Structure formats: C-alpha cells, structure tokens
Length: 215
Image (cartoon, rainbow, N blue to C red; front, side, top):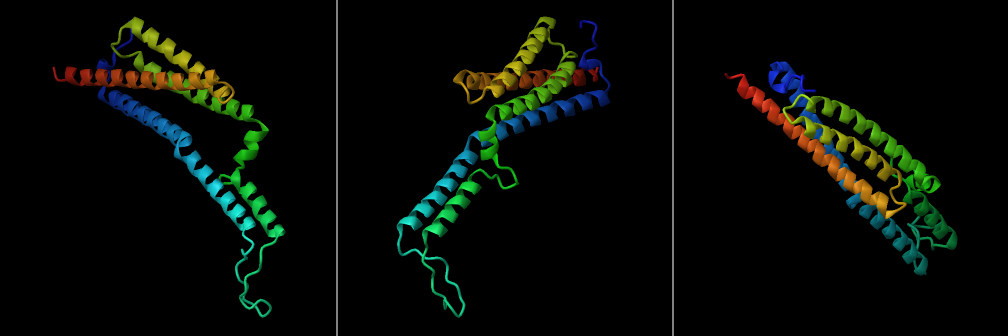
C-alpha cells in the first residue's frame, strides 16, 4: 500500500472524476437518511390517522339511525336519501379493511408482511448488503490513495466491513428483538460517520493536490 501514488499526483481529469464520485456518494447517503426518516416518521402516522378516520366514520354511521345514502334522482326516489342498513355498513367495513394495507401502487403490504415478515427483512438485508459492499469497494479503493496513515486505513476498512455485516444482521432481525433494532441503528450511524470521514479525507487530498500544482 505504501507504493500507491497519492491523489495529489493524479492528473486533473482523474481528480475531477474522484471529486464527482465522492460528492455523489455523499448525496446517496443523505438521501438514504432522508428515506429512513420519512419511513419511520410522518408517513406511518399519516396512514394510521387516515385508517382511524375511516373507521370512526363507519362507527358513526352505524350508530346513527338517521344516516342515509346519497339521494338518487329518479322517478322512484325523487331525490330522497335511502336509509342505511346492515348490508351497506358491512360493505363499507370490508372496503376499509381492504384499503388499509394498500399502498396506492398495486401492493398490499399488510398482506405481504403478515404472510412472511422474516422473508421481507431478509430480502431487504440482501439489497442493503449488496449495495453497501459495492460502495465499500469503490469508496475504499479511492481511500487507499489518500495520505492517511496505513494503520488508520486498515482500521477504517475493517470497521467499515464489520458495520456492513452488522447492518445486514440488524435488518434481518428487525422487529423480533430490541438487540437487532439497536444493532441496526448503531451500525447505520457508524457507517454514515465512516463514509463522511472517508469523503472528507478524499476532499482534503484533492485540495492538497490542487495547491501542489501551483508550485
């Protein structure tokens, strides 16, 4: 590793490529944090509120003996409302239960998760470990060409790889035990910190090479 040329000796076009790659990597990490925040935050709350509102309306209609359907304008009803019976209430309840697990794009998440939550976690973990392994290779390869001390490079790469595995294990067991949830959260924070650190070191090296070119 000591024989590797530092980024300061790379030609300008190579430094441009490395700089753009590093910036895109940071953007991808920020977007991942944003997605995680949305999934764990307001989206679930809004969906729950919507389901509760629908159920509350059905309960109110069921308890209101004067509730009627929308008027039908024909010769037989002359715009009069039709009283609700148990059949209409049951139909509304079945429709509300059906819509509860529907995400609006053709996927019934409530059914899928009830069928095999472990299979869902396992598939999600596989996607994450695959993408993070590619990120480890690409970002780690560039990190090798920085002026960071050799022992620190080894430590960062070992911890990076260990956290990817820990993150996959945490995702696989998410929701089954608090230890998996804590592992998932901790490994995610450490991964993000390592990625930011590596990107900063790359930026420092690119800045150093820019100053070197002036001499």
